[in-house]
Image (cartoon, rainbow, N blue to C red):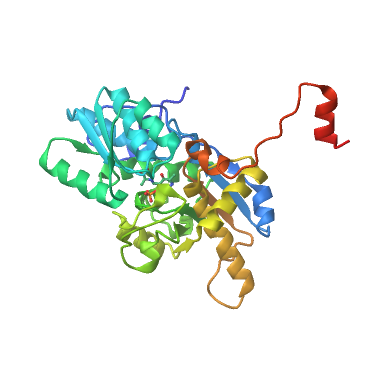
Amino acid sequence: MTYQGLIHTYGHFLDLPIHSRTVSLLEGRTPLIRADNLSRHLGGGFELFIKYEGLNPTGSFKDRGMTAAVSEALGRGATTVICASTGNTAASAAAYAARAGMKSIVLIPQGKVAAGKLAGAIAYGAQVIQIDGSFDDALTMVVEITNKHPICLVNSINPYRIEGQKTAAFEIVDELGSAPDWLCLPVGNAGNITSYWAGFKQYSGLKSALLPRMLGVQAAGAAPLVLGHAVENPETVATAIRIGKPARGEQAMQAAEESQGRIIAVSDERILEMQKLLAKLEGIWVEPASATGLAGLAAEIESGKRRPEALEGLKVEGQKVVAVCTGHGLKDSEIITRDMQKPSVVPPRLDALEEVILGN
Ligand code: F0G
């Protein structure tokens, strides 16, 4: 049977009101790719899989939650959706609103959104508004305006976003036949870690044997959950997770605690290094934020080896690890091209080409 999208496939597991009218771009069903080269590079002895969420219709995992949120909004007669965004939510909201015949308004932090995301939001017809402030300021503003006006909020504060995003956990369990031992993923506003944990718990029917441990990873310059307090001026190269006051921070902490996992932070340097490593070793190019979960995994494995007697660090031998790669590298190509060496230019002659390739 042809694939008909997430609500069609998993709707019976999602708590969506009956008034919902499905709006879908056939999101989901993203590949779970074995990453043996990277696993070996990290010391080997464990199975590593990449859940490649950048292959959703608008290039990020946000489409899972957006099909649910926009379907609910359309079904109850809403005509306009709004969100604050570091870029991916904006593009996704704009696309699903377009498909539903609704208007979309997106608030983004000025100058801090990758070009591919901004272009997406514009292409899908959103009204794009830059805020001279952070994502956190923009989120406060959209909450305020939706309390006052009949505009539907589609940030992950919206419970249907969480419902839709649970489907990624369902897909992983369906494909592996059980939950992995560890799930590592980036944490920004903390909707995704909340969704995965809810999804795993629901799908496993609360059998603890089937639950993964969650490794949530923040960027060191935007790590409120690691520091234990809000960060006023978050800063990181991973602009998607440049967030200082995560809306679902408490739930993220709870997911880490209940799963006997943890939330850690990694430097921008490590994030960019992992982004390149994943592309070079596996042919999977993701945006910087999306390499953050794997960067955290690498850091934990290293510290486990350095101090094997300590409880810190991660012992992955013999385990199954799934790393969620949330968005496509094409969204933020500038991060690669800005420091790249320009490709060499040769005249259109065979001898010149030979000289460059063979060096003679
Ligand atoms: N990875 C990417 C590529 C993201 O765009 C985001 C969030 C995250 C990870 C973190 O997910 O917020 O659920 O913890 N991006 C939001 C946005 C904030 O506006 O697109 P989270």
